[in-house]
Image (cartoon, rainbow, N blue to C red; front, side, top):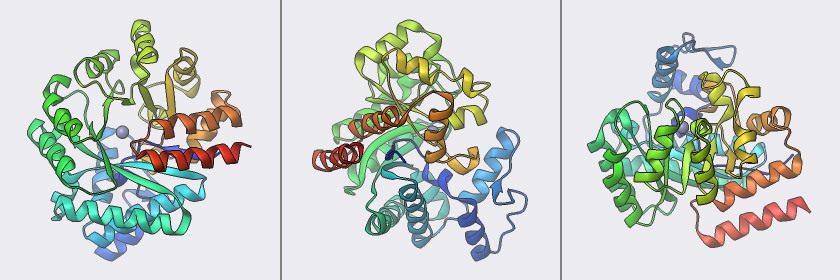
Length: 324
Ligand SMILES: [Zn+2]
């Protein structure tokens, strides 16, 4: 089993059905409209959001969030992951009545519990969401810059790509950059190559969330390769949301062949009936990636990780030791 690393996963979207069922029992809620036979059920974007919101609402206290991070990272480690970055969302915390700080501390506590059991390293990327508006995104950036939590190492923007323009988020990203945080932004998933270009022009991120629709513009693909921007690819998510018709149509192999740095990620795994392990299996089956190629994907992810040099060196040593 190849060692794995993940850069793109939304923590609220990572709650496994079994954990959601346990939380629903705690809060006296009925999961049957959203979970059947151990899987989330949804059939279009609004029923997907309904299931997502139902589950997110079951994480309310600090202990709930600690349990969520612990559960997810522990399951990742069982599947061979040595590193995990998750997107956190202070908006969710506020909705649940927790301060962004209490929420972040709780997730950090869960990550440390998972690390104590399995050795997996975890970091957090604070995210603003586009449909919450520019002010909310800047607030998230200010929180990320000031919180001082040792596991908060990045800032990102996610949410509905069809709302707002990249220029709107320049100030938020400057706040994060000045604080020394790593920068990633979702682009080129539900919208075309233009949002990826706008991200490069205005935000200058080292990584792009998805970015796969850059494939629509060969000049842009060349630019991504030349500038060494890392793409956080999530094939299972893309197929579930019908960004591409099938894995055979997915541009992962073409982007890789063009010299782009590509990584494998699960996005909101149980909602897309996937896991990080399944993404690696998909790459093996559909993108003709052997063990060595998959180990190189993990290496790309660790090299692009928003993590201190010492930890990065240790992770790379672990990967190289396993490859020998
Ligand atoms: Zn995402």
